[in-house]
Structure formats: structure tokens, C-alpha cells
Length: 230
Image 1 (cartoon, rainbow, N blue to C red):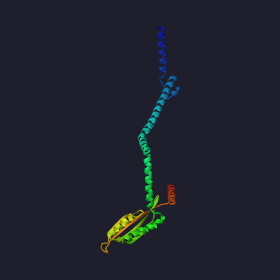
Image 2: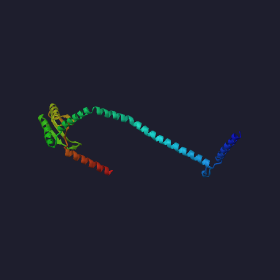
Image 3: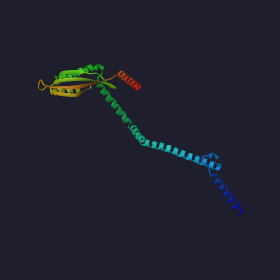
Image 4: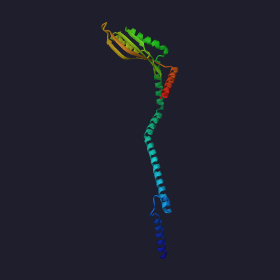
């Protein structure tokens, strides 16, 4: 009994001594605190730092996780698309060859440099062959595109309605591509039954390899100068 009472007294004195160290602490002078309050405060601060850092890491990891989850639908769609292409690779290659053959056929319908004069003569001959009177036949300036150039031709012809219609059909059926734009047909005052048609015929010729390369160089130089000006 004496031993138990002695232990209770010792524990009470220890707790009382520890509690006494926390009484009357000056928050403005923590350096003068007893050892136990210092250790307690340091432990609380260390634990707070660990907890805050842990939650910050978890928050960053969670943001990264959500970002990766947001990418999942697009990645799945991209995968399905590529899988379909892989399954149909043979068919796609056949389609590619067909498109290339079609493009080659279209390129053959575009006149080269040496054929432009002959094409202009064909348009003129098509009109004269239908008995039309050319009042205007004026080629304009070439408009350079990526792989071809466009030549507008201002034309004005007069004749009967049927002959003008046949002329437009003949132009459409030329071996080389010629298109008619901005067509305007009006009745002529004299003689009776005659019509006058104004239009812009456009024909196209392909650029050879040297011209395409030069066109690319010119575009690159313009882009470089534009960038330098900014």
C-alpha cells in the first residue's frame, strides 16, 4: 500500500511539474520557455508542416490524375481511329493509288507553258466555228497558286442564242480545263434576234518542278521578311 501511494505521489508531482512549465508562458519570448513547452511547440509545428506538405502533394497528384483522365477519351478515340486504319490499310493503299491516278489525269488536262497559246487559239476557234463575232478576247495576268497558275481571259461575243449555247458547250468539252465565270447575256439592238455575251474564261496550267520550287522559295522569303518586320 505504501508503495502504491508513493507511486501515485510521484506521478502527481511529475504531472504537476510538467503543467507548471506551461503556466505563465510569454508568447513574445519563446526562447525563454522551459524545455517541455519548447519540445511540445516544436513537435506541433513539425507535425503541421508534415500535414500541410502531405496535402499539397496529394493535391498536385490529384490534379495530375484528373488531367490524365481527361486525356483518356481522346486517346481512346485516336486508338480506335488508328486501329481502323491498320485494319483497312490494304484498302486505304488502293484508294491512295486511285486518287493519285485521278490527280495525274487531271494534271494532263492542264496545259503546260508550250500549250497555252494553242489553248487560246482553240477557244477562239470554238467561237468562230459557231459563227460568233468576237468583240473582245483579252488574256489577263497569270495568278500564281501553289501548284498551278490561273489565266483569266475577258471575252465578249455576239451571235444567236443557239450558237452561244453551243460555244459554251464546246469550251466545256475542250481537252484542257477551261471554265466560264461571270456570264452576262443581253439582247443586241441590231440585228434582231442577236445576243451579246460577256464572260471571263479561266484556264489553268500546272507548274513544273522548277517553278514549284521557286514558288516555295519566294513564299518562304516573304514569310521571313514579314516575321522580321514584326
